[in-house]
Image (cartoon, rainbow, N blue to C red; front, side):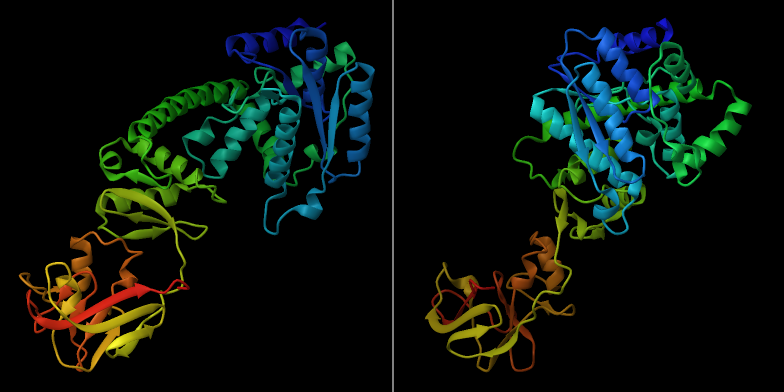
Length: 448
């Protein structure tokens, strides 16, 4: 047997502890030269760890059924358990989604199902060093950051491992020829019909003419980037741990965000946002928009991200909120003594004696009275305070933006604010304990 490929696989396994705490491995086998080399190695060399083959028939090419039968037959010959999933990628792909990315999601979803079925801990894919180079440049072309430069990691926290990552494609092909390892060939790999194939067939061969050791150079850079990523991920994990269990899933303390290093902040924002099960992660531009908000925004300022989410600047935290973009229902009605139904509110107006307990619900004046939602130009002078816009009052008192639409205003016949819910009477309608005045009780209807 060719000792070079075997030695490289073994070196990778031992150096990176790929089989550490391993209860079993799902081998992702397509039938190509890479995955058949991986399967052959496991059949010959791996005796103390159970493994199963997982093959997915994407249903995209005419040869898909033949490739499925090829993998099934080979596994049967060597008594290897084989799980097959027949997918319909063209028929189930969401409109506008990338075929390559959707197929990847379906593929890894199937591998995870097989892993759970067998109670195994690891999934092994047959990515080689050339794949890592392609992924590196593909990430650069798509505008990825440091995580993209890290390319394909040799292992992931979810148990995915890449035993062939030190092996180059040409060496794998020679290994198969020399040792009689059969494999199938996907002819579309040689057609420049997608970005990855253009890189593989047109761009990278030219770059390798300039630097024959291109794959080594990319591998070194990716390894350094991966080390940096692992360091910053640990810093993010430490930060999340330091926030304590009381932190809401969608928020991050402002004190930390405004004092931590930008590489930690940006990764923390992306991690917290991803934990909300959003359809897409934060882009580079969105992350920078949030950081600009942190640096120069005011309380309640926000930036729209995607999927209907906003990053909202609170008093002591930054929150990711999914909000209804439609405006809050507006209230505008005349109120009389007794109960009044005003939009989604029940408004009760009655005569009472002012006490310390109800003073913030009382005002004086002569009917008619009206109740409405706040307007941008509204101002009020509360007892013992200077006149302010109602928006300023909300900011001063740290009233969350979600609660502000319920802060209704009572006005006189000239539309002047004389009472603000939860704050009390304005100038001209002041009351003191012992007075007979109007008491107003505002409650949201249960159906609102």
